[in-house]
Length: 471
Image 1 (cartoon, one colour):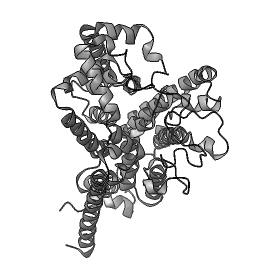
Image 2: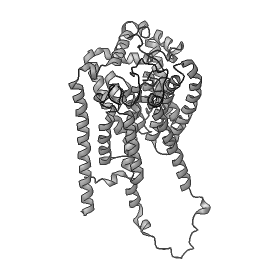
Image 3: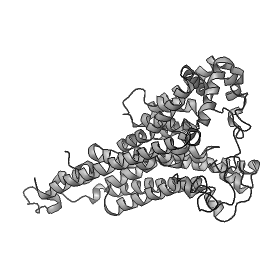
Image 4: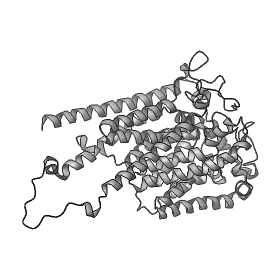
């Protein structure tokens, strides 16, 4: 064994131990936060109780599924099939169901990271080190923390979509996960045109068929609620849960409504045009990335497009920041030099923008309000019900932080798609520019050092796992 190989082995082991230690400290820190605070402070399960009540109504009083309010401005707003899913949970005691939901949602973060890195081609020790380090950070993002706090289903739907897209194309039911997720919540529908444009026609058909099956099941089991949801325009009512202009609605429509002083009617025509343009550009970008061999990039681009153009994107909906951080971390693991530095810098910016900063940094005597940088420099308490009618200065930026960050991220992915396509075209040298063949018998020049290195050198440079010793 050469001294260089021995050094690489020691470096790999050190990196593995450091990443594992960071993950253990991170998870232990979250467990301590939960155990050292009253359960109602860290894990209220507020939204999960709404889901349970909707499931109970679906079993006992179907007419009440969309006819009751949990509080003054909160009610069940998911499709009828979702109510049937939550009806199945009624077999468990409430405490067991809530705690199980929290544990599974917590596990969704590292699993999403692992699957995203797999889509990027990372394998072996490189994948393990990157996954542990990334998961240690990703669990502390505000959308993740808030989803766990509320008992939201967003992390599980994200995991379902990421798992579905991570499966080999030859799997006959690939696409069913997307259709099932869309049956529970409509936003994942954006992945169906993405699959079509990525030329994955069978997967798109499976997703569409599965989604249609969830609608059919809803009409069979809950005909009244299904008629109200699908045929009366109820699903398009953006005022079902809270105000579109509130801080926690980090959608393009929310931004435009706040810019119009809370006037939703004035914002909608502009939103329809911008949503159509951004939606089309985003899905085309995602499909182009997928076709160029970067499925993880395409998946993230499609997800962020959906978050931007959806009429409502609450702050906890932005859990898709988890595969984004994994994407940047994976890019850093696969690259060297400036590309690695740029990937790590971008990941750091994402963590700063979306991080869940400690509560003791909040309050009138400090810089950070309740939701970290979301609403920073605000003179108002950023409660869910608060509608921003007159934003000034830095408030315009921080009250729309996730929307603006999402737009920048989508633009960067679009640039990546265009730059990759241009680089691919540059490598396609026309036949007329190929070097002329030597006449038979004429000696060829001696190959230089780069050519003598052979394919093994190229393989080692392109395979991130080659930089880590196998044992």
